[in-house]
Amino acid sequence: MTFPLKRTLAAATLSLAVTAQANEPLKVGISGEPYPPFTFKAASGDWTGFEVDLAHALCDAMGRECEITPTGWSGIIASLDAERIDMIMNSMSITAKRQRVIDFTRPYYFTPGAYVAADEREMTSPEDLDGLVMGVQAATTNATYARRALRDSGVDIRVYNQAEQVNSDLLSGRLDVILADEIAMVQFLQRDEAEGFEIKATAPRHEAYGEGVGIGLRQADDALEASLNDAIATVIEDGTCASLSEQYLGTDVCVYD
Image (cartoon, rainbow, N blue to C red; front, side, top):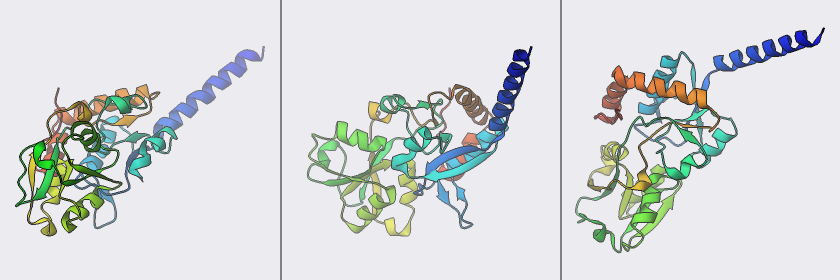
């Protein structure tokens, strides 16, 4: 006669645990290295930017609290697998390689890669890369594209751990050209120290760039994926995504159905 009671108590305990977990803040993983205008620290020391504000909007749409959780970009998927974060929202493109280890929501934005070099440098095609030294950030779609599409162009590809290291070496003359996200480069070129540099061209659509940027999730988190997809649809349909994109990026990069 005690077994049904034990089963009832066990079910109640499980239900309370699930409820408690649902009430915990979602840990939104971003790179600890600032990536303006998508993620960066305000003067107050708080993280802000297009994706940070959009993450908070998504959590509001789901009725959940968000906790921005910086981690190293190179280990961000490992942090997700280890449950130190619940989702990755840091300009991570949806690619077949990444989909073998994590799941993604629907894409919420897309921008191409852009080549940036000194104003006086002539660059109109991949042939113009021959003999140049080009920098890319490691573990990015631009790095993948460079390896796959530019290996026969004669360019010397240098890979860096952080985007700011790439920018710095371009400004100092240690690099001739860099390949990085176009929107990030538009912001970079607004700096005083970047005067004399410009976007020369954008990379074509290529499998290395995937389907756009989505939120990375553990493969078992189907319920969270469904909730986030609904929330993404909400912030796109009500104009929140476009408004934040215009505020931080100066253009609408949101992905519409």
